[in-house]
Amino acid sequence: MKMSKLYMPTLREVPSEAELPSHKYLLRAGMIRKLVSGVYSYLPLGYRVMKKIENIVREEMDNIGSQELLMSAIQPSELWKESGRWDDFGPEMFKLKDRHEREFCLGPTHEEIFTDLIKDELKSYKQLPLNLYQIQTKYRDEKRPRFGLMRCREFIMKDAYTFDMDEEGMTESYRDMWRAYENIFTRCGLDFRVVEGDSGAMGGSDSHEFMAMSVVGESEIAYCGDCDYAATDEKAICEYKIEVSDSKELEKEKVSTPNIKTIEELTEFFNIPSENFVKTLIYQGKDEVLAVLIPGNRELNEVKLLKHLAIPEHELELADEETIKRVTGANVGFAGPIAISDEVRVIVDKRVTNMKNFIVGGNETDYHIKNVNYNRDFHGEIVEDLLLVREGDKCPKCGSSLKMDRGNEVGNIFQLGTKYSDALNATYLDKNGKAQKIYMGSHGVGISRTMAAIIEQYHDDKGIIWPLSVAPYHAVVTVINAKKEDQMELGEKLYKELSSKGIEVLIDDRKERAGVKFTDAELIGIPIRIAVGRKANENIVEFVIRGEGEKIEIKSEEVLGKVKEVFKSQGLDI
Ligand code: 9G3
Picture (cartoon, protein in one colour):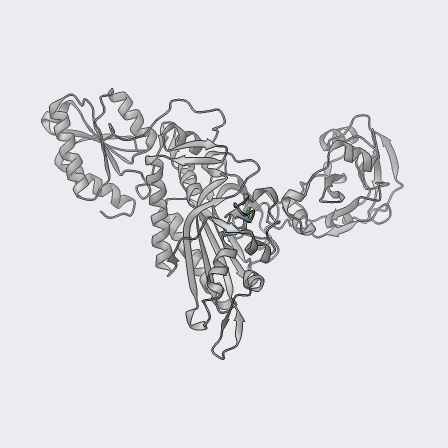
């Protein structure tokens, strides 16, 4: 491809909203452009990378016998009403009406659609197991789209659905998918971790997330250095223990704490560590106010709270000032469980019940109460674990201490059991002719997010450093001075020779200064650069591998051999 013809609108500067390297470089390299918040266009170079990632996914899906098809993006509300999920996602689901006022949504995922597709025609056990996938645009009206392709409202996903006779078959399909995902992310060059997708079920977790590591990743991951335990902080079990102290319960005492509100201010004021306080967080639920109590030195895990309340995240938020004032009788910062309005549902992390003589807000502005004890002074709904795990907590699996890391979820695999076949009545006839429920799995890879995650792991201050497996082009032949006959000739000779060997080559034939050409080649991250300059008449060119920096001068006949070496070093043949 001649760069003089390539539509590649590079930028020097990017909007301040672009903070992540992947967001900045995708914009600067002319690979994506934002249409509206959370909605992007993929320009030629960016789209070539998407296709490379998709094709790696296709090969690995085909390797495990998954068959590609393509479903519609628009989905009838009836199927979501039948599965009972039509209202589960609130404003996150893009809903629309057709000319007959019939309700539809833009597909955020396709469990209902795939189940509906097969349920009337997959009738015999002989047709199982069945594994189908698509690579398609998904729509989710995220509350805060950000970080470029990391969190979009429209994105490209590979979603696969597996159909099996029984639990054993489902687990077999799950393992196949797991292996395929390990191959996919390895071939994309990603450093990734597989983490538990849900808490509680130790070992037998029925879902896993594939996390591409990044110090600025959206997800925080707790992992053990001594065993294979790993989970997102939202899902990780928090083993924090409070031993029941045998000290006796002291008399409650109201203390004047003028404008002393935060745990930091309180520990200083009382000169007592945060372990001796209990935080009372006031939440607004769908139609109830909640007071959630946790030890003062820990953080609440809202995902665990939502799971306990069995409500979706858009139905829970921190109460506003006026609600707090109404139910506690005090300004923000003095909430506590004692004498709180009895409309409030009090929820207590179990560890609070092991604490003795702790301090809580006094439900009176500028007052706290000390020597408070659960049971004697207040009651509440006790929940096993509402805490956010953190560095140093004990590993729930082996007892070692946990470490924390950050990453971006690029894939997830789920064992669904008969959730959707029950809802939509998808059965097959077993060998005795008896109707049985189909066991399903659903498995996604974020194609566009994977592209961003690769840049997060492969970039420097000059731009992207694409692994050969996903690079938009493998090599660029940079003609230093396109006006010089001998340089253009040698450049075109190399371009033709390499292209004839199946190497994807750009030739920079633009009438630009050398500096611009080198800067662009580094920005767009082409793995191999061959510069043809003044020594063209000696048949000498400069060979550079992006990210390795050192430049060598070689005969043009040696270029193909060198390129093969680079492919080989990344485990690729040409
Ligand atoms: C919705 C909306 C957002 C959603 C969902 C439904 C996430 C929803 C979970 C999944 C599970 C798997 C197949 C590919 C892999 C992930 N966000 N999920 O179901 F209506 Cl608005 O999508 N689906």
